[in-house]
Length: 406
Ligand code: C5P
Image (tube, rainbow, N blue to C red; front, side, top):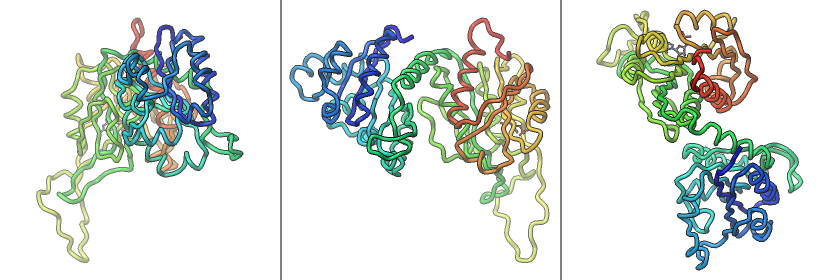
């Protein structure tokens, strides 16, 4: 239900703008108020009259309109909303949003806003897959912009592919999910670990693994979007720091351990980092010299602290919910079940990494959630999908009256 929620709908100029009329209707049917800002190009596809009639409000089109600006300036438009929705979001408006251009009312409102933004892209498949758009979308995600769609299918231009605007009911579902979740973890504290660790052999070389940090970073972002005060402790990763999340960058397992333990107590900890199990036993202040024909035949290793086990065994400071990952190549569920007990955590998210780089560094993950209640098999989905699903599960588990580990 969207009762009393105020949506500022930015309609930009794509053929999918006709679907925005239905979107206005569906949102209002659910109790939301909808105020619309239209770009000049949007007015070529649908009329301000239709938009105004359906929203029962003025359609705002002009940055320099004397009447609009005196009645309702761009700052007030963006303040008097709970969420900004851009549908359709053309390649052009995404580019403007990513670059901070503000040369009309729509782009100015989007730059001036202090609210979250959900964009529903709509464009030709080539425009959607163009590296410029890909870079803009990735930049916007880093700024915290959420996306609904696009979907794949036949297009108005006669081509087929990804770039169709999500259907109005899918956009509404995304908006409902946003309002349903936001605030569910308000007042809660979370730690998420992510990425690999680097264990120095000497000042130049290190031991590491293939972790990209994609999954851990997505989880930190999703938990933070539910309102939790989130600390991400990450090893070296190319992933940008997620918006709204406090980030501590570390290199080694010992640094990750210390940063996590110092931050306890929290309500929930998710250990998604691929921590190196061992590190070189001795610190080497100088680079080990290569002597030709005489390779280093031994590297003495010692075990790293187990961060997940340390958090789960933190006594009074133990989070209500401790979640680990088990990357396995065989007998996935059996190994994860054993690991759940050995590390003393509440949930293990087991995934099959026998396909190597498909999971490490890839965008998809297939999870089996193992808990004391048994195994739940999730369908294969994107890493951000896994993050959303896990965040929803955490919201449920930490809701009042629930036993967190159930
Ligand atoms: O034992 P294994 O490395 O397979 O366990 C994986 C889980 O334990 C992951 O959640 C990982 O983040 C965590 N872990 C840890 N500290 C270690 C090793 C693993 O937190 N030293």
